[in-house]
Length: 161
Image (cartoon, rainbow, N blue to C red; front, side):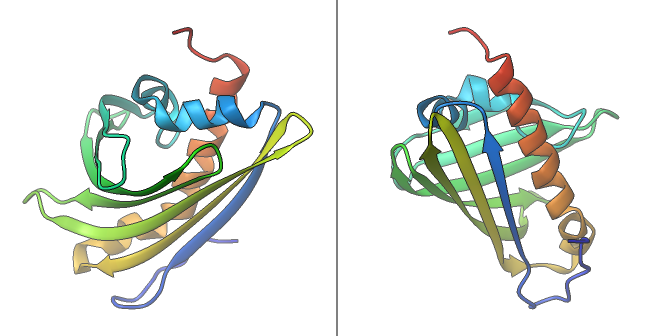
């Protein structure tokens, strides 16, 4: 599916499914351990110098994604639901230079165990959009896809804790 250029106020959604050669408990840990999440979150070449999760419904998320050129893209969010080990629902908002949200996304991550492997489904639906958000939203599907590529690499060679 090619990335779309959404109009302000229009619904914009991304749904992706990936199969990982790892047990669901390991994939769950990669999503819920901030040190592990920091290793794979974001598009290729990005790092996450700040990655904080308050793992409870209503808990805050704060991630600063650093692009290869050094630009930092802060993201905040709120955990809506944690149903270990099968579902995580959270909102996320990319912040503009003024510190205000450019857009808000409702993200649902579903993990299904299938013979020692994990089927992961991502559904991201934009709930609120500002005019400055459109360039970011055009790359949302690619960003999610690259994040899942990085997650796969992390699961093959996970960090030791």
